[in-house]
Image (tube, rainbow over all chains, first blue to last red; front, side):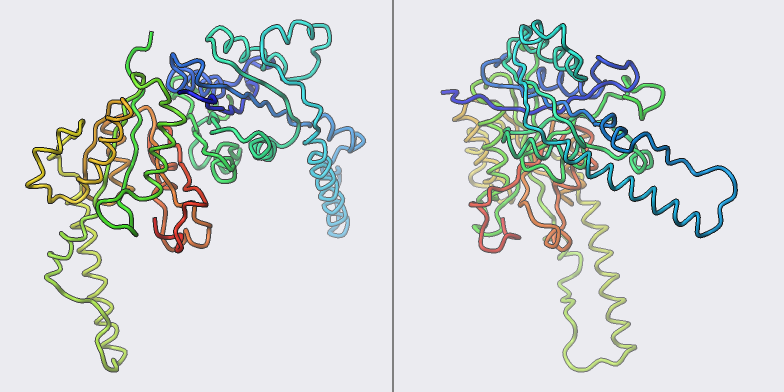
Length: 218
Length: 218
């Protein structure tokens, strides 16, 4: 009667406070909410698909050749200032386009059980791998099947791209639950996904009692 | 192990094309999606809560005393036109405030099984009741427990109010999936809910092959 399991994609990222390899408060919250409220005891009815997107700031910095685009010291005249602005903006554009092209490599490794991480211990340099191990191990304990993989690029764009490629039944994303004023400055991946992703999206806000001192942290 | 069932609130409304008592294409779609993708075979793990909001245009019309605010025939000078506009806007404001106060009556009747509708057959004049009967009967067939009720007012506001009162685990709303241009004119309840409702919200877009000739219809 059950047929194919419901495929739930969950976007997960690293914590900005506790640092690598801990999951962010909001992605951990979204994941636990999904287990408790959706999967429940019906572990064979669902499959969880974890996507971690690594922002390739390292790659971008290399392309810029170590240039430091801070405003030069000393007084600049208007023409000098214009030239500096032009150069800085060109570099920014270059960085953006490089980031994009780095994004969608198709060298996927897919992790589906705790064993998949054991053989990798000696070469687990890739950022995000410990994060995936956390979620895959927890699924294994819970008894629900899963797959997890890492992509590089802008999280918003990559999530949309991966939803198109993987076609999950729906997407779960955590959110810091920032107010309108804070959102202007930090942007939110969840809002972008709700607007642009092809499948249904459910946003799970971080619980107020779990928010860190600085609510922009996660 | 299962504990309390997951309580899913679903906003349902009548079709604009097939007319009373049929559910709209998008609310039927959102409901069937919930059964197929979330509830699945775990019928004891979930409880569905159907909210139908009736827009009290009838009440409003009575208050207006049957006035017909169409532009009077014949040529009007500027002063006459201003007076007419002022009167029409005042009436609109009156209607809005009446609509609001009608909104949150607490004379709830809750319908939880097909039997609850049988005794009402002779007095089932309230709009929306056939709609609830449709969803409650379908739940009964599927084997999942449910509750259904009607409220009056502005659907956006009433849904937010009821989420606060009922505290479901999440809210499911259907959406016509209109483009940005159409949305400007018709407004969407789903977008408002995603922004303002206190619990997680999942929006289920109508399937493209189910859209009627005029996509604003539903």
